[in-house]
Image 1 (cartoon, rainbow, N blue to C red):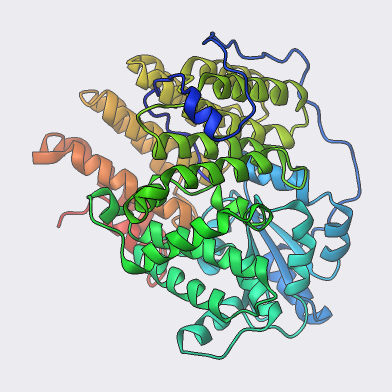
Image 2 (image 1 turned 180 degrees about the horizontal axis):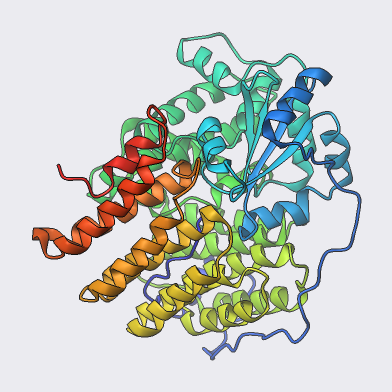
Length: 540
């Protein structure tokens, strides 16, 4: 997961559904409903053992590119954050792999933490926002490819292979396709199929273009590139569903292009091994895709669900995928059931099996890098199950044992707010902000705190004023209003404007705008950060 905090939905009502269990050949014995108490680990979190590691360049990003030019190597840029669970998963599953370490020697590897001085400005330069993002670049800073998390672990070193030598940037391959270029080579197909498209521009327009490009790419790959063609088809379907999300939610039918992709995915799922090779993408499909599938092929809803369950079950037991991704596959299976058979819900035996998997995984996963991703995946699964109390207990335990407890406090606050405990929720948000570390992180957590105050204590003018002034102070320094911080500032602006509707809190807004003027005044004229800074709470 790439989100900062899980947004827990309303609990799902669980019903027993014997016919569905039988039809899907799940091999589970029906059982009664029972209360699940979470396993609370008694052993401490343990630091990972020292093993061979990637030789990270420690001379900064500019220095890394200078060294790359000298050595004639590409740059392997890893953008992450200390608190980020998917980042820690890379550290525990991919970066320690001997094959990956060996391959990394052919690159200049540089680690850019989102809280490093100037890191958000670098994020703007490389068009990265989400943690983690791995970008492969030439010494002249031309991007060659992006690498996503969640893949079959054996694939990562091979993906690095594709970025070596005299290769075209992925975007150049895409541009040639869009211009009506010729058929693709096997290597180009593979690079497109394993590129992290979800880390690209998230606009509806770009999702639509990506869907068209990758569907075209799938048709121009050699027939022998079956896995690559399958992955391209799946990413195209994912992108098309994302592009049409608003229209689908409004009840509009899927476009002919999305309908065609839905049929392609439906056909692909019948080939278990081929579908499993794309399972890391399939598991991220949501209600948008399933609603389109129901619209396009209502008579195949049962078959689609059968195939989806079998593929996700296979992923959930496949050692080529990290354990957190295996748990996410279980969540994907249950989400598909909720979408494709909403009238019945999740069978009790599957609820029991999911809870048992969570218990066992949390009990044995003690490594400080492996655990955060497993916890996040477990929380997502508990959300699907509607197990808010269990989620709360897991989060409470992580706050007590994690090296970044402030990360989990946001989720605890979400649950407290859902329960109607606004004071407890605000207290947790404030504590999370105070205990967070790193300039960009503190601003990000601070904006969540202020927006929570506005939402839950709108009459507390003094509290909102003081908290916002403290948060704006996090921006008072060089190169801070970029990428994630810029987006956070825009969200904060929107929240405060809504709060001040009809100038109900004009005095506070004036104070905040004056403080922001002080921040803006220190930013050089012509610096891109001036515009978002000067726009904050500015009059129309």
